[in-house]
Image (cartoon, rainbow, N blue to C red; front, side, top):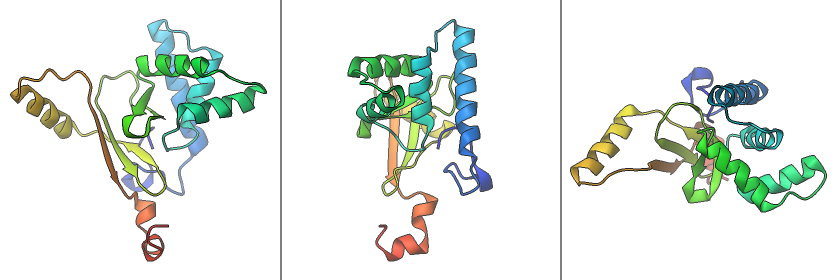
Length: 174
């Protein structure tokens, strides 16, 4: 999940999660941010962002292309998707999950921050985490070695709370 914490303080969606409100909030934030920056959130860029926010799991460019083609009733070419993704990345509205070559909505657009993610190996739910101590430790470690850090992505894999249920464990996580 990437919009905000959900019920009971979990950063992964719970059964009570209002996903429609989540999407609406992300789109409203994107529109406001682009308006303030003088950037054009075109209808197509907005649709790509909406498709990314439709689930709390990373989505690949070709999956986005297929979904957008279905929505528009025709074929959407790869450059169209990649241009939209480049725009959304440049404005901090999405993150690229590098290990999956996929994209997820950003929970804090408009603020400069490193990408730290928890990725469920079973359901692929992905949560963006905010941990200033982790960010400081990575920066300090790089600096101590004379390394000038330009981009930071930390991707941690494991099981989300829903996939840790006794039923899921009894079936080997299936």
